[in-house]
Image (cartoon, rainbow, N blue to C red; front, side, top):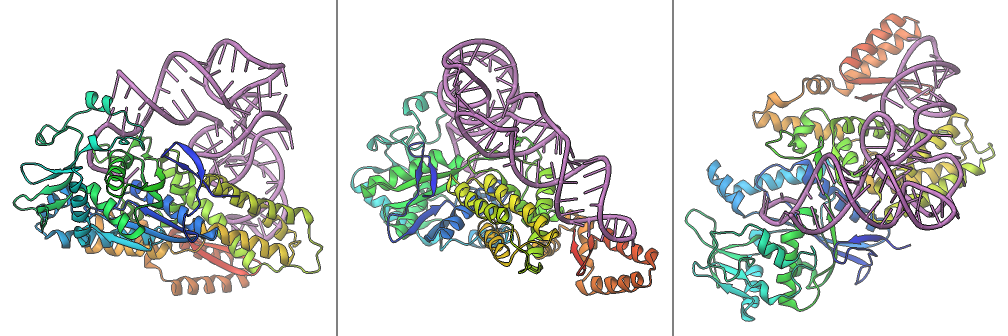
Length: 494
RNA sequence: GCACCGAUGGCGAAGUGGCUAACGCGCCGGUCUGCAAAACCGGUAUUCGUGGGUUCGACCCCCACUCGGUGCUCCA
């Protein structure tokens, strides 16, 4: 069974098969590093992460390129306002971006390309377009792309150019363009703005040309897949296609992957609505990175998803169930003498198949998730009855391993991410934003917890349950949950 | 205005022209436990926005309507 993905270009679901060496060559539009990333940004990166993880699980090799836009209007404006040179300003947010990606378990692309380190590639591309009169220089020294020269313009988004001309607002201040729809390739330098001296003249690159130049530099003129948020479809990706194909005369990306927008509490996330959250905001409120990851992945990428705090709690609980199960299956004593329940073996096998079928079917993460939970219940029953065989145990572990290769939530790294966020908040003087429960929870070290558990065990042995319960209650209030199992006491942080 | 997407239980959400409409969370009752927790069992939608149509048969196909959302502008 092939991995099938919806292709925005053509509007159909198609098999995703790498053109060369079984290596998936993909490009994903990365962040513009002018501020901390918000959860909408991360939904896109998270789903791209699932795509790359699943492609690899299926045996594909990966060559994934992501850009960092480290020069643009917003960066210049914000850096100036902060009185910081733009490279310092962007370095800070680029670092923060990768810290956040790490917290969410998003793998690094094989290649990260920074716009400011690829200026010559961009100017060469523009020169190439200029040589065919597709790029032209305006009076102020800016360069534009002549859309009239690219008849396929609109093929990705299905835009009707006529309609756009009539209905859309036109940039009135860019009157130097030959045609209203022509877009900037190169922006002439202005006082107080970062600029480069190039054969095109002094200036800085437009946003669209960055991606074309860097994608082609690393992946060649034609490659397998290009990804991004749905909002980038037009005009950004449309422009990329126009520039790239005009220069190379071959098809640019074969497959276009777009992740739909995220709503927050039913509305589009925006600062004015007061429903705008960065990852750091959520971590400081005490939500776990794993819960955020799992929630953002729980709705398939082509559906709009509504982010809520209830959903976050729910995801955290669901993950707890999975982790408890994973721990249990790890330590369960498989009974070799018990005759294996054939129905269980069949179920595990079937659900493992369903898991792959779901992800192969346009990355249906919701269904993939469900097949794992089916096995969780069956596995728990078998372990309750001590009828699980060593083979079944192994089969379950293999499913969990595949699951976690893609979802990456079973290993608990949450405390570390949270601690980082707390340290960051303190260093930025944002202590007030740290949830108080978080501070009490973090104040207790593992050693202290173990010591209290030892004391409680002693009390229980003496059947001093009042004291035992007191300790348990005390720990609970500090965010530590105890579980008395047959094999002893285990604990976890809330 | 033009274009597009969605509407499934208390909440999130999958799904198929015809078996009891997945799965998760929550809630109620039970088993287990010193008590909890975890785990398990049972109960939680005779029903898939509304109206009409196609069909032997529709939640799934078609039409209309209502509601919600998105794009057309910087935006993941």
